[in-house]
Image (cartoon, rainbow, N blue to C red; front, side, top):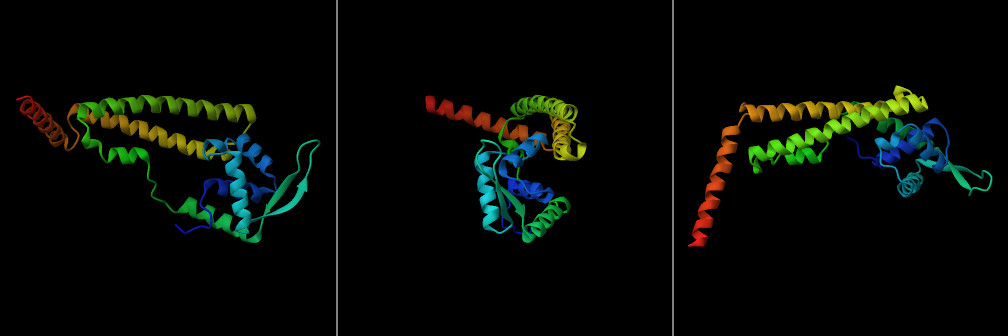
Length: 212
């Protein structure tokens, strides 16, 4: 992946909105919420203004005018610069075409799964599956509600659909992992169980020695 002047997903969102048309920050927030972009990108006013300042500093966006609506405070309308136009499209094309390694917390936990006894690991994975089931149901309901209530087209919910597919795939994989461990067909299970049996026996011996 190329090194970007800014790599914050919120910066990408701002540039994408300004690629459509010039906007002021308040309008950016309204459009992102209307399209449920806050489900995929962490959206806070303080962060947004910091990103806008950074984009302006890097000459990727520039202020076009200041507007006032009624008694509301003045708002600065921004637009993409020529450099920002090129940067946005190049960044977007790279994100869509080039797979990147993403370091998830779940993967980190899985890498040390053997530190827990198989029975405890199964109980924890069952709990994860239960939570995933709830998330999947909530995501489906949320997407349906946004599409029906606000008439948002699938095009503007595609990242939510991607997240849903990932959650569903993870749920299926976790369920199968639990099934294999419980059925005794999981590769390395004997060594895993033996390791914890030896540790438990060693712990008992140490307790007996300490008690003498």
